[in-house]
Image (cartoon, rainbow, N blue to C red; front, top):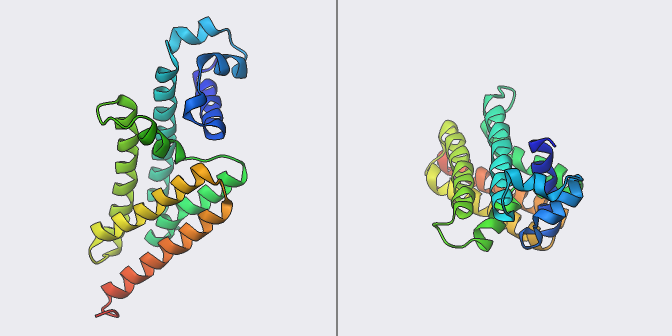
Length: 191
């Protein structure tokens, strides 16, 4: 049994069926591993959920770092790249990022380790956006970052319920509009 395979299969199951359906028994069946072997690593479903979300967060962090280091893309392209990836994933019936939104709702208490992990991922997304906006010299970068994150979180929340690809395009266009307005403001076109 490879840890990453179990975590990836768990993430896939969570994206398809939601957090409430997670059980060690369902994962043991899915990965064809005896339950007692899974319990050596994850004593309960909550431990597996935490580890899966941490693994997913690491994957997203790596993607962000790679994107930040990509000199072929401009900061606006790097900001909008998340929608391209989200579009590709939704086409494959995958919903990355939605799990963190769901985790905050499913574990609403701020002292919950799972809630804290989800909040950490949301903060990392905000920092990524803020850094790129500051690199662009955006006027009031913090406010624009909050607006862009609100668009992204709204898209992810809607995907949790509706799972419609069209929502990704709507969110991308709205984020692009916010960026364009911020650029206009920065150059005095809206004064």
